[in-house]
Length: 458
Image (cartoon, rainbow, N blue to C red):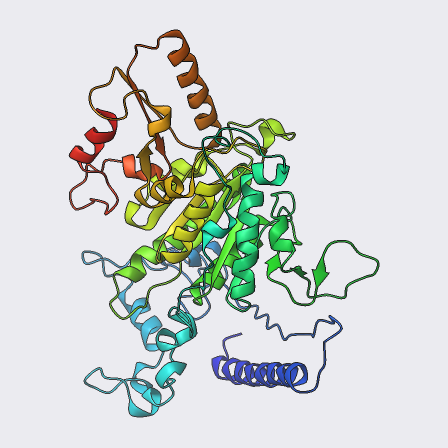
């Protein structure tokens, strides 16, 4: 167990064999046409079972075991400036690494050790794949207006005869299908077996699900050995983790789920946010595409699943982070969702959370109004206000699909009962534009100034 030399020799031999196996699999797939039938090759997996704390102190000052026990997970030796009783054990531990074989007397690394380090882009920090991707260009994006609903004075607030046009996620799906077609190698959609349930039918018209195993016929799951949708496993952890890896290598994707199930991965999203924040402080790091999340089945809508599929807590969870890296969007109709998604695709170094409806709804905003709402974050809605400018008796505001429906209904009722009341209606899409940071040096580039805030709400 303490024969370190024998272990290192064995580990080197196993690693060399694993690399040879990987190269052989790649050659078979790329040059010999193997695995085209969906067969999964036996990729090498190395499992090393080692004693916990191997190589450190074996026992503490009381004679209790450290190595291969829970104590190895703690501070192994209580060495302190005013208590040096365990200094000999500490020196023995440090010298066991044989520093004289690694360093010169002046502390510099020996040339023969330095020569082992990878060169150029083989270094982990300099590899293009791990530093923003080999291709760091933005997606090729179609014009979102080409997929928008025709909203005018006659159609505003009504449902279209084509029921698909009344579902915001269905409207978005046609745009995402075009994005997939324009970016066949740099865009993917991830989800935990809910992509069809989330009404993304237009995306399925352009690309099937990718399924890496053998496809058993007959099947009706739109499976294919190649596709841009990965959602055949009901695991939020896998899907969101895949999106993170995809994003960190310079490509762009979306992870969509019901809002309650996004809470399953909120700590993973937090870790990604921490990575973005720390990476942004390193001048040598490139920037990264944004992490795009879509939450459906919202707290304000009693879907057929009802209470079990509702938890808006991710909004609060992300709102507590450093807001320069967080965007929270609550578009109230299909056109605004299209404009928001186009903006999210074009921004980098962000965590974008979109709250969207998949249920039939009235449609409200023209493409020009949606453009302002998506990019300015909020807008005074003239046609829903009796006094859009100047002094008012009441200011109403809403964010999101169902609150907007309810607020507009309330405005109509007030206007019918009290036509003399002067009110202004503000629709809010980018929620954190309303957030006021009190901490020094925490001003968000999107934070409204006091003057701007008063223009909307005073």
